[in-house]
Image (cartoon, rainbow, N blue to C red; front, side, top):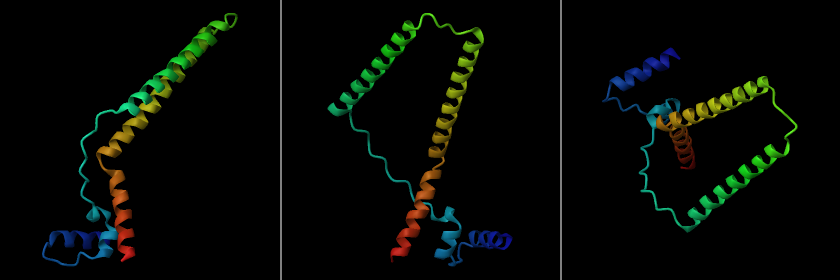
Length: 130
């Protein structure tokens, strides 16, 4: 491992060294980074997009109506104070886990970890075909 690291540093330091072989690119994926693809401009939302938004809000309204109906139909059942505390902690933990996963998703997207992995796989597949 140390020998390959020293070899990598020597190859990077010596720009006139033509020993950048395909094997080096496969071992050191940072050398095989693809250039990012251009992002096309976003198209305006069409009719089907608006229909999908209306349908989603319709489902949300039905879910809220069902929750209110269910909540009002069980008047004889009460939740003790400790139950409210546990319910609040459960909601908080759920929001924290969801927020943490979204943060990891955005971090991964910003650092292009998914593109590097896909680019190396695509590069090796293209090389195997020839």
